[in-house]
Length: 470
Image 1 (tube, rainbow, N blue to C red):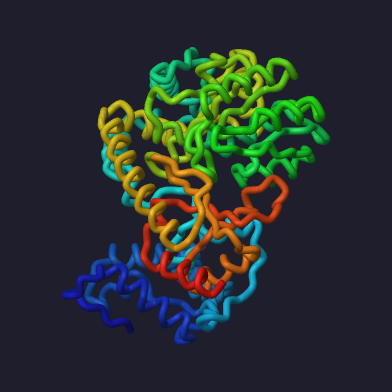
Image 2: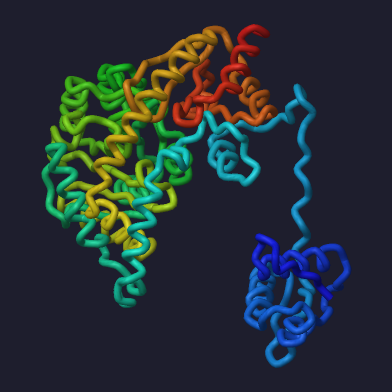
């Protein structure tokens, strides 16, 4: 019935799965048709019953077969049709798309996403800590079952919280382990903070430009967002003061080190002024500092100046270890920690102790610091290379960071940045138009570049052609 090749490099199970799939999808096996028993097919194909059983189980998981108790295996009557081939636009004729923050969120995760993700928000696989993850997974597999099957501690895995306490202490941020709440990535940390301290109709201040995923979350809650101009020194102190007086905001969300998307850092003097304004207007400051690992340990933070009085400090390991490990954290005052903890438990119970145990194992192994040092070296070289190349094709840099992932750059006279992004997408290049990072999607000539993905000759050739055409 099916011919398998025992000498092929493709495993026999995979050969059988592919053969059955091809027969089913080609119409050779109609919905409802019964397949041979495991023993019969094993004899026909000259393989073990285990091979056939594993192949049938995979086909059931794929939705192609149904397993009926005491009856055998049948072609599913509810076959999911194969995904139609993507229509690729002719070269030079891009299909128009609506560019907004939702597009940016979805497009970069799709299977057929552009080849060059010059505008994405994470590091490529080559920059992440795959070896550390594999070693930690091996160690986790040897742990007693009860440690990998249970719900975790409400605050999060205690050994990881103690490790984070030490990391924060190295940056002059003092706290106790029960002031640290582990979360499902920094996104959940930000979401918990919004829900704990904001109500519909409240005003929240945000960096402008700033973190694009933050805006739809605030809008969904009915919160009014007001942008604070971002300068090379950090948030504009004059703008922050004026807006705080006018709107009486409850929270100010700001990104401290290697800001997303501009790559800027908050200068010590600016940080001091932000805290004075927050005190004067009874405002909490949410410090999104997930890129702090790219900075020197002496880099300033709002939390180190404030010692977690008015500052809620957000961190994450997704950018440096792997985005597949969704482990973030909040560090704040004991009162705020309890408030956030109760909301965390109400919304989703505990966070993943397995993921948190993996991160702790990676930190405890001791190679993480070496990985970070190498990562900084890579990003510093890529910052220089991409910045030089962008200047070479006629783009203007808002700021030239020494490290970190992002550059904020644009052509002086390019009014149609979304059109530029659409033309790039037609050539397999994903750009991130600057308007997506504005508080209210205001037009801007700037785009966000991720230097770890943007160091690609086809990107610069495209930009050079665009500059000449303009």
